[in-house]
Amino acid sequence: MEKLILRLGADAQTPIDWAIWQTTERTILASGVLPDADALASLQERAAGRPVTVLVPSTEVLLKRVDLPPGASRKVIQSIGFMLEDDVATDIDEQFIALGPKQGDQQAVAIVAHHTMRQWLDWLTTANLHCDIMLPDVLALPLAPVTAVEEDLEPAATASIITIRDQVLLRDSAWSGFCGESDWVIPVVSSYFNAQSGPISLTQYTTDDAFSSHQKVQTVTAELELPMHVLADGIATHSFNFNLCQGQYQQRKRSSGQWQYWRSVAAVAVIALTLGLIDKGLTISQLAAQNETLSNQIKADIQSGFPNIGTYRDARRAITQYVKRIDNMGSGSSAVDMLANLTSAFANSEIKAQSLKFNDDRSELRIQAQAKAFSDLETFKQQAQAAGYTVEDGAINNRNNLVIGTLTIKG
Image (cartoon, rainbow, N blue to C red; front, top):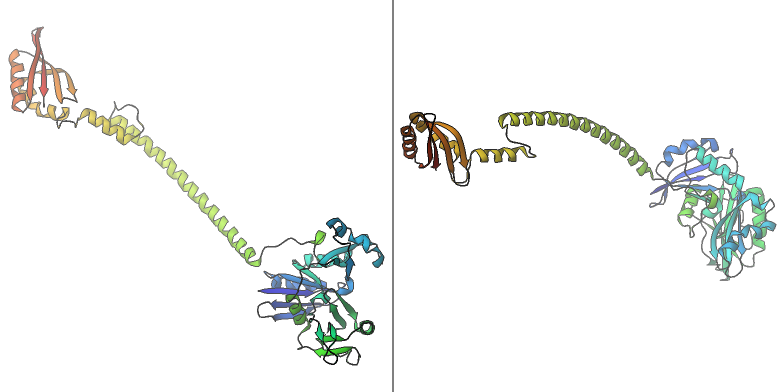
């Protein structure tokens, strides 16, 4: 994983250090110095998809520990500003108080002016850089654990020091340090060391050896690295979770760079899908219109071919049932077959059928026949029997010099 680390200045004209830190390899991939805050926008490409950690000058941040009453409630902690009024020269309402780690009844706090916080965040916003974590730079300096001085084996306080251009950063505990121009910081720190009861083990991340002659200081020169490498390594070994951007200055979580990329891809995909759906919708609409035209044509053809079919939902089923009514399949005989087989009988007998009635269940054709003479009915009967049918006579009457009789033909 990679992250962008920035070290801002107290004002817009101060040079800004930056570095790309590779967390797994613990190495600097790229680094540089910007001339001022206006140049922050040039880091947009380097920041893309990477978390951004911002270091701010500890000259602008007061680090303190406040003694709380035993078992202090959240309301007491929220009113901690009133406990600090005597320690802050300016109006406490103009200061932002960020809560750090709490140890026992001691609450660590970081105090910075509201206008300074807004200034830093405005620089980043203008440059389109998202601040994930903001720390006072002195807290990014690695701090070695308490050791023992070999001469007297007494426990030794530890401190770390580094020089960045004309500034000195010195960290002497988990929540305190010094930051400022070397010409005044060195004397102040020297007096501070003198006031300590025991020896001090000082780790130097610089070639400067300002405390080599101090009686209480034993200096240890660490492996020399770029200052931003040292600070990045210190951030990586941070033993507590702290961020100046809290409360009213808490930054919204942003999506990762990969999500930004895939969101763009997804947007293109959605547009393409939408256009595809529109095209498919038009095609479906055209097909629906064609289907409706074809359906109407089929209905018209069915009505023309089967005028007595009646109303129906399923055309295929209705036609099948219609044909079954006309051409019964129950016993192997049908009205159509029987009439076809009786064609010669009708022709030879010269009778005329006044009515035809076919019984599906019994495969029986009943004919109300009209003939000129009784012999014509007999001729028809003989012809039908010759065709393989059984013929039964019904009532026979004379009417208007015509013979009217009923014949029942069974298949």
